[in-house]
Image (cartoon, rainbow, N blue to C red; front, side):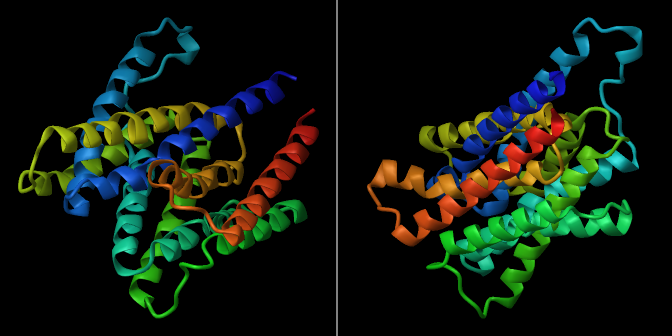
Length: 291
């Protein structure tokens, strides 16, 4: 029962993280900067928030067995951070060279890559239920963005696939037994992102509105969301760690509707229903197995 309660709480925190991630598309569009400037600037702000959280967590009283270094920097955590950083870079680049719909749909091929990598590297055979859930999530996402999906953007589509591979890799490394503190991977990943993108920031225009948008992205859309993500991911499966974030692209047009009045098409609503029902049924089955 304790494990089930931890899992339920983790799913709620992961859902909150997805809600925060979903605000990214709107605020990124509102900032008239080079994508790499936004990429580096928000990472720097996010890491300030994450550093404060890591310092707080490190100073909390713990038993001797649970005491850990403030930051573990080794090949494992570096590769996890690299996967995290490349996820954002590939996705931002994909949206430049292909449609936003293509980029999102291809990024959420991540469950397929998780199953494939788990089979190849972890020798873990997928369950029939997981394969069916992945199939229906992919169908639902595709239906949701059917109006925006196009062919002929080979390079951009390839970048979108790479973002899906990066997401799957980040989740598997974060879930690996060698990962003691998932937040370390986020911190290292944001540090890499800052190094790559911070140079572009200084050539951009600043005003109070842009600064506010950038602070929101750094503090809430990346910083707080990944703190919630790092707390929740040890208590859920690798597939759930990519199924729940699927809420992010589904919520993007909701924010647009609330702020601009742009309506959501009936086909998109059908796709969203397919995804949400699949996630709900999958999580119900997982909860039953945990009891």
